[in-house]
Image: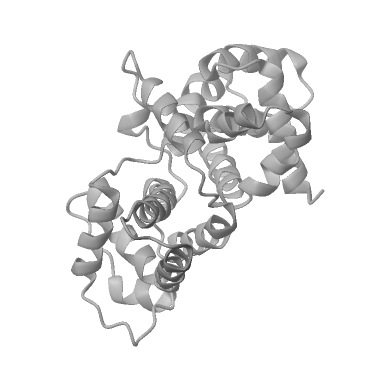
Length: 280
């Protein structure tokens, strides 16, 4: 399986109301108070490393990352909503949960692989060793997977970020004929990995530009906007397009309309991504 192959996911298909699920998703992430950035960076790096090691598809890789973040939020919400929850109890539950994260990573990988392709079978023993799941934890993986599904309330879908990137690539980049599909896919997957692992760093550099923190939360939560900025970053990294204001406007204006923002917002976010790539 080519781990940089782009396939249009179901959620990024060309149905008439395809944006609806993205707007609902942005509202979900903007509405909760649990900041996952500090946990998600090492977690995303672990998933990216395992996906590379076991040659898993971008669909499995990024859907696993998205599902793990939703799992964190759903678990935290359940602790907070317990009838007799006290701060120390929440912290104890959180600490116990985080200690078992490698095991949850393996479980989510398996759930996502089955969701993506019912006939797929991962080498769970090898993934557990690579994820450094404690040998002291002798838990049946099916039991863990059922626990994960219960916490998620059976909510699972392909990565919306990857889906938006795939859709926008086919709609805005491939028709330009300035680079091959394979090169666009390769650059795109690498940028997606940077975006999910360095999300806090990327967005923190833009905080001072947005005085309304609620507006900033909605901006940061919107996967369409991030996917659009990644498309513009790919365009910038292609030598034939880097210095072409004509090509930039040709892509940025309709793309921004799809993302429901001004094109300058996509360019600001693109520049923030480029700064992280450049180490600034």
